[in-house]
Amino acid sequence: MEAAAHMTQKTFTVTDPESGRSSALPVRSGTIGPAGLDISALHKDLGVFTYDPGYATTAAVESRITYIDGDAGVLLHRGYPIEQLAEHSTFMEVAYLLLIGELPTAKQLEEFIGNIRYHTMINEWLLRFFNGFHANAHPMAMVSGVVASMAAFYHDTMDIHNPRHREIFAHRIIAKLPTIAAAAHKHSLGQPFIYPQNSLDYASNLLNMMFAVPCEQYRLDPVASKALDLLFVLHADHEQNASTSTVRLAGSTGANPYAAISAGVSALWGPAHGGANEAVLVMLEQIGSVDNIPKYLAMAKDKSSHFRLMGFGHRVYKNFDPRAKIIREMCHKVLAALGRSDNPLFELALRLEEIALKDEYFLARKLYPNVDFYSGVIYSAIGIPRSMFTVMFAIARTVGWVANWQEMIADPGMRIGRPRQLYTGATRREYLDIRKRV
Ligand code: SDX
View 1 (cartoon, protein in one colour):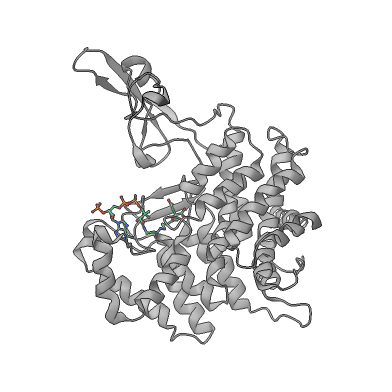
View 2 (view 1 turned 180 degrees about the vertical axis):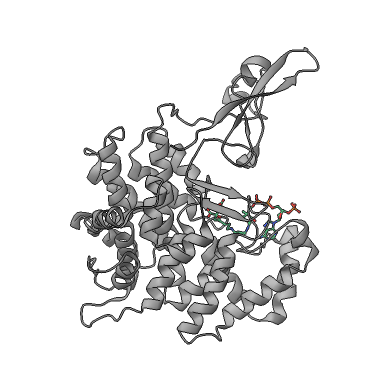
């Protein structure tokens, strides 16, 4: 039985120095990590809100899915360290773990994979949506639009309070994301759509749908499939990040879950979030050579330049992002296996990390490489075009989004998310007829 948060005997008392009124704020603790100060009585007792722009110190939910210790560089999925899952598991097994809460038996995993395989095709009418996009439409725009449109196809069979409907939704969206992603890629190439092959594993199926053509047999490279599967494991879930929080907030209104996932895709696209993997490659190509690194580091430190070292820094990790370490090691292995060890972008990324991590600005702010810093080197090496990098992230993170959405909807205490604000606008004033305005 999984532990739940529980009220401790401890309370923090906040007192208004002017009125002398106090509010006793109980401490709610989880299994590991910082406890939460329950402030739900604060506004009633003292007429004030808490103020936490960017939610840097706000636990908005209770969750049992993923735990991050940013100072120690720890990432656990249902208690299992990401390093062990990366070494021993697969994306489908991690998907089961995140959704169900336990590692599957061989039979359970086989059944789960079968359920996913059964849903890989998309409705032919949904396929026609792609014809409405320009050839140069960004794949993330196409994916978020087509995923939202799935609500139109499954709206009537989606009772979010029916566990079986929620399970079918999970299978459908996890199964169809790669098919939709590949269709977006084929549309941008002007090539025919390739149907899923249920004889292939999840990552191989995606590569086949992206790169096969009807006129010849596509040779799958097991190195590429394994590397992509591992990248999916590393991107599957990450606590209450911006896109997961978006899915939760959208889903908290009772909206169709396909619409909520589409909102997550859109949030992930931002360069401060999942869009960073594409931005890192643009940055590395901009830097071009090791000699230019000092110039770009200076720009990253110059607030007026608005330039940031993409793939560096993290809201939670103030140490190495454990996923970045694993991906960096993967780069060495994958590039060697593909006979591309002399990859100039990877060499540049390694030197950039080395130089930045000796720079006081980055050290003082605890800015380390995050998951996006090296992933693009591997995506490029296995032939994924840069515009599809964030789509790869979205495919993997769909599992985390669905796990968080299910956890929220299944919670009988779920309420619509509705943050408050610190108002700094105009006080009340009377309407002025336009003839009197100057
Ligand atoms: C992901 O939340 C998640 O878990 C996200 C994610 C996931 O799996 O879901 O891990 C995936 O989104 C990883 C992050 C990818 N984004 C990038 O790589 C973009 C570059 N990084 C940043 O923009 C930034 O570091 C963020 C957005 C990641 C974090 O921003 P914060 O927490 O709001 O930090 P901040 O902007 O307040 O920065 C603190 C200081 C500032 O300087 P000072 O005002 O203190 O002088 O550090 C500086 C910032 O200017 N800073 C950087 C920097 N990141 C922060 N300076 C230069 N380059 C950077 N990359």
